[in-house]
Image (cartoon, rainbow, N blue to C red; front, side, top):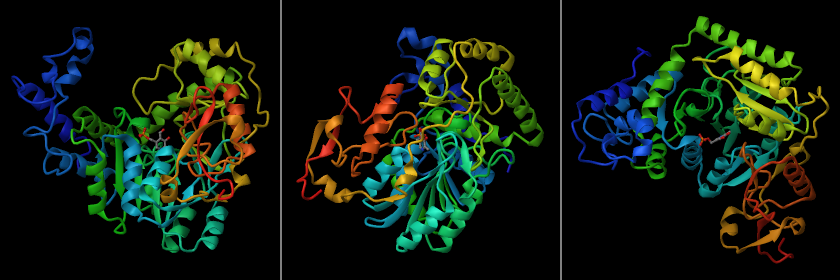
Length: 476
Ligand SMILES: Cc1ncc(COP(=O)(O)O)c(C=O)c1O
């Protein structure tokens, strides 16, 4: 197929040219009705912010330009079926879990998954077994090991599915995932992958490999995270016969809007064409800029984290900032540079895959910011050791938890209680505390350390109270 083609984008441009006046939704009437102060900025985009009118096909029953655009996606990613998502990998994860798992199925789930996976587990009413990732030298949870998966399967041979996240938020692609996937499939498990940060992982070395080519059954990717798609644009890919396509389509229609955004879908079409346009030669030239940037950063005395356990996405830079991650991020904000996120010890930068990257102009700004910091060279991180509990299950089932009342209590009184709402440092959106998990001293110490370092949380109120289940202590 001709990957230069962009059928959906082209149809929208035609629509914009042809329409004299709109007598349908949206109410901005292709920009004719719009608040004056936003008009200049929104003007061009409103022209293509159409709805499912003649010639623009239907996301949930595609027969025309959306079908062609999705066929190009299938061709590029070499899948059985692929879909555009207009509600991010969040909806993709919900659809993936709900369509592949049945209520009460036992599923093995990577403990450092995104909150959307945990929400999906609860909605699907499955019985999860959480398996902990290994942390590397940096203290960052890199991913699970094959030994952990083997142990989990020995203890839970009745597990039906394995839910993985690959790469992690920092772009670390743990080396043993190919073997883990092969092993899980040998044992008859379905393999579901949240590959939110790996939509570009089909580019070839030095970009790590995608789980699409490792035998995963279903994979979700945020095209808006690393590819040039608009926010909320994601892809869902089906790779095997073992996934029920009817069910996937049923959940896509149930969980997504009935008015999908055409600008988002057109950007997904363009993002796919952009990725396809990067051949080896172009990749080398893009990586030259990236390397110059990284070298420039390191020359200023800052370490970029590399992990032995994983291949690293070259388009992510992890600045080492022991104990000062949030402060360094603030300083970069003040200088007009917006990092992807920070944790206590690091600042993460997501770099562009092609396009304009004015390295020479940007490096002096970093230099200025760095001059206020004491770049600590690889002091040992203080990891929150998820491996201390390699395998856990919720104390109460999701079904039982829905019948229980909840109460808000102060953090200091929470030890031993059972969390009724996830507590999530955001970003990265990986819960520190899960719904149905018993709260330990370890959780509380880590939460306090993060609060002291300046982290933001979802699920923890401003007065540092959190939700727990009202339960008779004898039951607990
Ligand atoms: C690993 C992971 N999965 C899923 C998501 C949700 O993706 P989206 O923003 O596309 O809904 C995120 C968002 O940060 C994520 O980091």
